[in-house]
Each structure stands twice: as structure tokens, then as C-alpha cells.
Length: 253
Image (cartoon, rainbow, N blue to C red; front, side, top):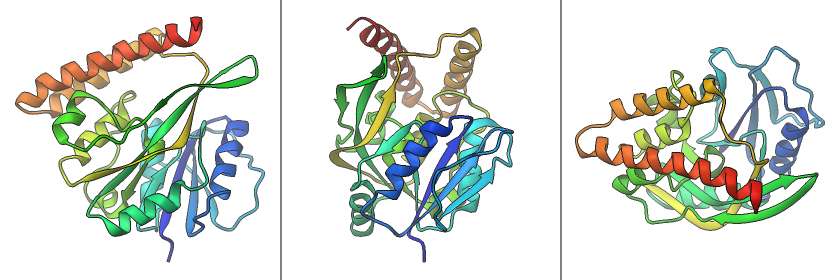
């Protein structure tokens, strides 16, 4: 039986996708299946021949969230791990997370990540984000300390039966998922940087992206109740400030 279903949503980035796949192939833990969900009309070209790798189309036609949900429906593993097509994993990530998930009463395990700034064909680690604070639902309301979906492993039964990605939001989708999962069980963090998050200095700044961010923030706000509505406003404000900070940090430092 497959233990881990890995889901990579992708859209017209074959070079980055193959880099991500390579980091999966190089995992010390090998009992996995890899579901590559194509969110474009173009054919996906990969450089690997491995029976554990499956290619599928995004049947939902609703962007990356729909692609992730398509992956959930196809997954056969006990656990689901997400990897964005422009991120990579350190070789020990899956093994360490599986051990934690098997030994602890948790529905989600997350790791730290390295932020790697890429400019002029050079890569430089600007800072590391260690997302291993003691989990609390209220703490998550103030700050998305988990980071991105590439850092997490989740019980597949929870995703199949309880919570999926909200296909009506186009921004903050990982934060929205974590908030809803937090109501269902415990999270556990591994104090190691096991994910490489590559950043080219761009942030969302087109009119469409700004509107999508605002609409998504409003939809997340409406899902909250009581004091959580106040804390979620603070959290989204912090996320906005971080976006601005990252732009100037990477551009001028």
C-alpha cells in the first residue's frame, strides 16, 4: 500500500517542474506515488520514467486549488504531501514527516523552509523561516507560521472527507486551508529547514491580483466567528506588510 501521495499542481513551467520532481525522486523515503496535475492545455513534459509518477488533467478547471483537489480525489496514500512546482524538498523530508505522523496524534506535520532569492542566474539564501512554533489555533489566526503547502503532510482521510481547498479563492488559499484544518486536530512542526522556497523578487501587484487578494481575504474573514474575526484582520494585515517588505528586501538588499 502506498503511504504518501505527493501532489504537484503545475502550469507551463516544465523546467521548474522537473527540478521539483527530481527532489521527490531523491527522497530517502520511497513508498510514495507522485500525482502531477496539469492546470494548462499544454502537454506536460517530464524527464523521468517511473511507474510511481502519474500525470492527470485538472478536472475542476478552477486553477491551482482545483488542481490540488483533483489530486486529493486521485490519491491512494494514507498521507498527502503537497509540493509546488517551483519548490524543492531536502532528501529527508518525507521520511521525517512519516515518522512523526505515525508516532504522534496529529492530522498535519509541517517543517521549516529556506527562502532562496534568485537573480541573474544566481541563487542566494536570504533568510530561513522556521515554522516550528508550538501549534495553537489562536496563534495561527494571528500569523500563518506554517508558511506554504510545500511544507505540510496531512492525513488523507481528513482531506478526502472533511476539508478541501476552497476553489472560490485565488489568494491566501494555503492559509485558509490551515485555518479550517486547525479546527479538526493537532499540528506538529519539525524544527528543520526541509523545503526550499525559490523567490525571484516578484510579488502580486497587478490590478487583478490585488482584487483577488482582497476578495480572498474577505471570504476568509466571513468564515471566522467571534474574536477570530478580529484576529484574522490583524493576520491579513501582517501578510500584506510582509508582501511589501519582501519586495523591497529582495530588490534593494
